[in-house]
Image (tube, rainbow, N blue to C red; front, top):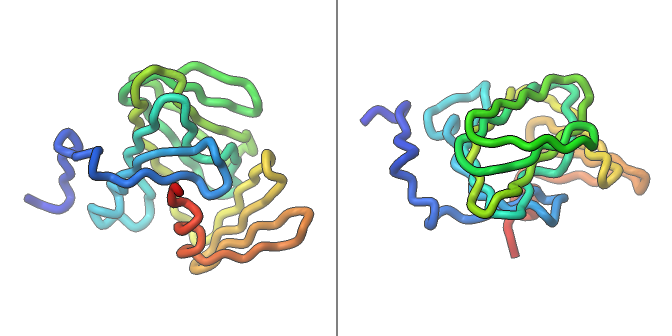
Length: 165
């Protein structure tokens, strides 16, 4: 079979490790990097499964990259600048670079499955107001700016913090 085709219905979710956003303790998810597996370089595309009561990433906004989620299964809640909105199968939520802080969580009794994609710019700036930090992402380096100064992370250090204990 051509590597450009991924049969997601055949995925064994039980064999996938769970991870989290490194700065959100309420985050837990299983992620399948669809775009990476097919060789895509400019659009980051992932299939994500959230357990009940869990969040995906930390609430954030983008300065340069647009992003979206498309709900496939389950019930969730997207928060846009502090206002919660129920979402379910077939719902599409777009996140333009308008400064709106957004977060996503599973509010249902079963897993929430969604497709997400966003641009892969060489540089991105993300505001994370709940922790008072601004992240600057660039090749090989992530800088977290906050009141306490700047914390520099490599992508490997970011990944290590994303592993669940």
